[in-house]
Each structure stands twice: as C-alpha cells, then as structure tokens.
Image (cartoon, rainbow, N blue to C red; front, side, top):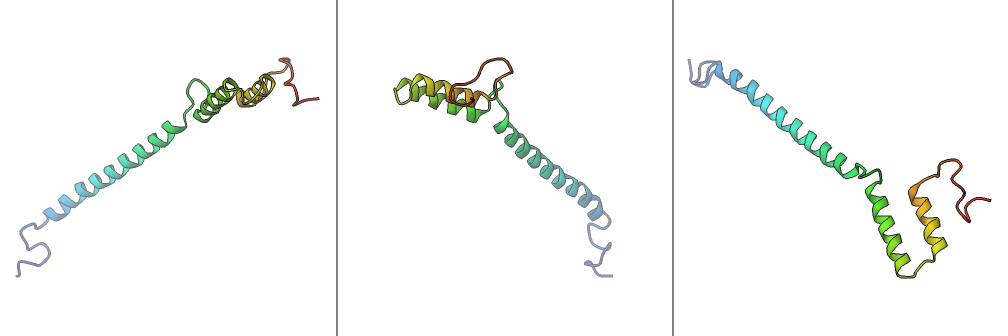
Length: 99
C-alpha cells in the first residue's frame, strides 16, 4: 500500500469533494464575466432619449456646420430630417427629396 495510490493518500475521497465546488466556482466566474460583457455591449447601444448615440453626434456636427456657415438653411433642414427619420403621414414633404 503506497502513499500515492488513489484513495490511499492524505486526501483520500476528499479530492472529489473539493473538485466539484471548485468546478462550480470556475463556472460561476465564467458566467459573471459573460454577463458583464453582455451588459457593457448592450449599454453602449441603448438609445438615450429615443436617439441613438450616433444620431446625437451627427446632429451636433450638423448644428456646428450650420453655425459655421458651411451649409445653408435648406441643407441643414434636409439633412436634419434624414437624421430624425421618416416623417409621419400628413406632416409635409422635405424639399428636394420628394416630387
């Protein structure tokens, strides 16, 4: 009977008893990391006040260009209407886009 044989060592049957909780701990850690990544990805794409972040940036750039005189009033309104999305029926047409 050697000390290195399975079940004959100092740990005996305890090695299985410790491996199951250790495996569960590792799986819980992996699940937490996956949930954190999913939360971070989703947080980056959630709209604020109904406008996606990219739309806010584009609107700000458009306002700056209009304020700097790079585009005129008609161009500003046309581009702003494109950023705001399709109009509801009966709101009128955007100049230059419909005939």
